Length: 165
Image (cartoon, rainbow, N blue to C red; front, side, top):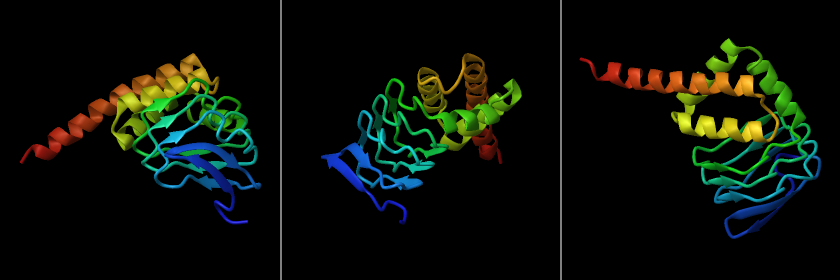
């Protein structure tokens, strides 16, 4: 089976359900703006999900039960995460524990994510969603938020330095 060799239940611009056929990577089709409640609930073997820039909202429990999920590539348009969107993602929890295992790594992670997506707000919203899902603890979240604030400052500094002749 190849990537995306599965069925999507899409109503308008909302992805309601992914019917998994044992895929390890799922690429959501462009044009989808909303990931519905429990859309990936049956995708227990999925390791990676790629969301297009068109996705704006991820509803609650969207990835609940994706026990093998390690990586979610978010499009630039994601603005809202529902309550417990990543609940039950044990592999994602293990990956984040490694990346944010100590305060310094958490701060660096927050700064890096913020510098890449150029939005501390998006970084903080994602962090709050991951706390709600039980994927991150408070210590990890505080270090990521501190890093997000540093990342915003560094981004502004780089922009300012590029204007100096």
